[in-house]
Image (tube, rainbow, N blue to C red; front, top):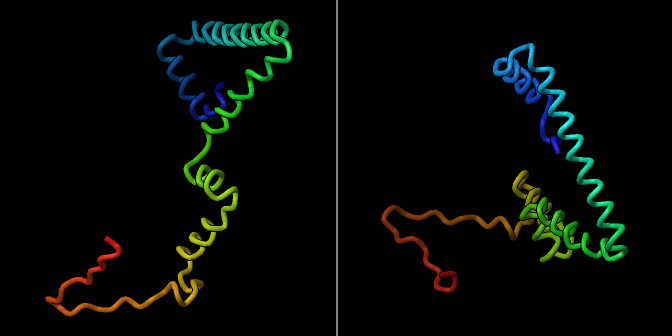
Length: 130
């Protein structure tokens, strides 16, 4: 639940709690919060166990779409493209990444010289590209 809270954030919370509650009430507030979190976790665990007992093997069938949704939640656009469009083959991204880092490693066909324009000359126009 608090996996993203680091030690720095915890220290800030304790200092803020110390300022707001004072040193005499802070230990009691921390104890109350810890007990409330422990009790909420226990309620959720008991509810899950009760559902699993009442529903039986169909409970795992209900959890499968939720686990798929959780996987999609953490998916980046790059991972989605790789998985669905490229069938898990990310060599396209690694090749483009290596070209961006070292353009000298690109094939000669990919590095065409760009013609220089004379001042006042119109820009090149490609009817097929527009």
